[in-house]
Length: 281
Image 1 (tube, rainbow, N blue to C red):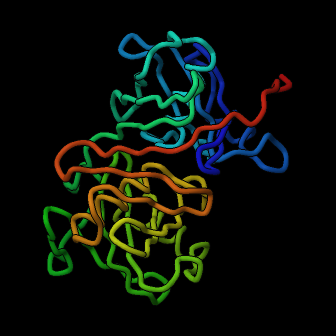
Image 2 (image 1 turned 30 degrees about the vertical axis):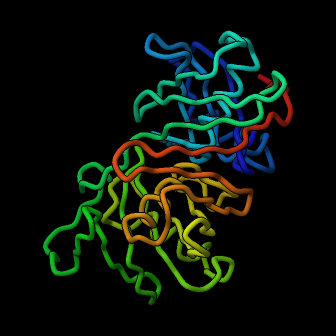
């Protein structure tokens, strides 16, 4: 399945003991496996309609995934795991219970909007470790802004957690011109990020539109990132670059974001089934 080009292999399972991390490495390989940005497990839950676990192509487990959770929501609806008349479903994740609203036309599911939780800005919640150099730390509207130098470039990173860590960098030139494949892995692995970080570069087009590229930890550049789009929308509002409702334009498609400045961030976008098959084991 994919959400705006962010593609995943979904497996429905109740096996909590299997080495899913190793299987993710094999399955996600685009030459010797199926090829995807991650392995999503759809598992039973005592707290929600299902439980989601997300493994990146390097085998690491992610706390949250905005595009992935929409794919899971569509999967459990299409598979009849919830009643066809429902308009909302809930998914248990490492970042908490997430609620999805289902949009339908003529009885067919046309899109989903995921509640992505409240953004968090405390250093221990992102998490980020900054020691000693307090002069390099500036607080803007409760958001930690921290400048780093990477490959000779000065990058003011806007740090926010959407259940997983994000570093947002606003620039004035088109995002297509930024050397993301060179700078992205360096930002991901900065010493200040004990759990690494997702890196978003963003250019404000208008108060209702921002173009974005994303370097995802454990994956590399992806065509879209739901939690990354949320982080960009939050940062843009805190700087008064954007209104509460806006479009985040990514290489794989456009996501609709909404944040009231207080509660959780809402992310709406597609979730499409591509094909089904069997893994030869």
